Amino acid sequence: MNNPNACIYFYHKGLIKYTGVMLKGTMEVLTDQKTKDMIWRKGDTMFYKGGVTDPDYCVLRFTAESGRYYCDLETESFTIE
Image 1 (tube, helix red, strand yellow):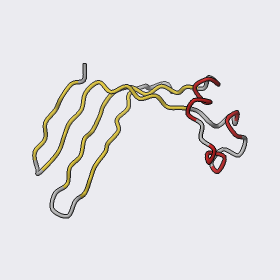
Image 2 (cartoon, one colour):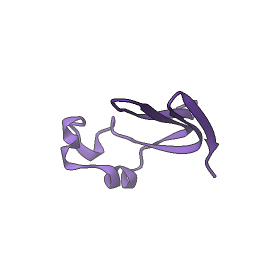
Image 3 (cartoon, helix red, strand yellow):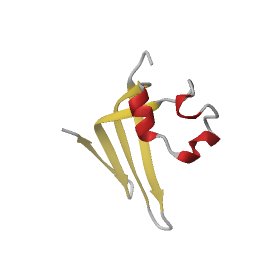
Image 4 (cartoon, helix red, strand yellow):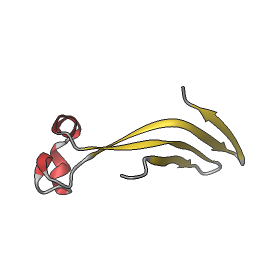
């Protein structure tokens, strides 16, 4: 929580080609009950036995600022405004 810098990566590995996108930005840890209630789903008790009020349960909010797209051995960087 001392360093908000974050990166996430999504990809699809097809039979012939591989495509991916990396997003760079910041991550926030949200622990307020309103946000936790909004995201909570019935089956989440499998992971958080204490339910929506479990002290280990939190919500991560990622804000993308830039990224890079990859496909067919080529990349393209972009910014998000």
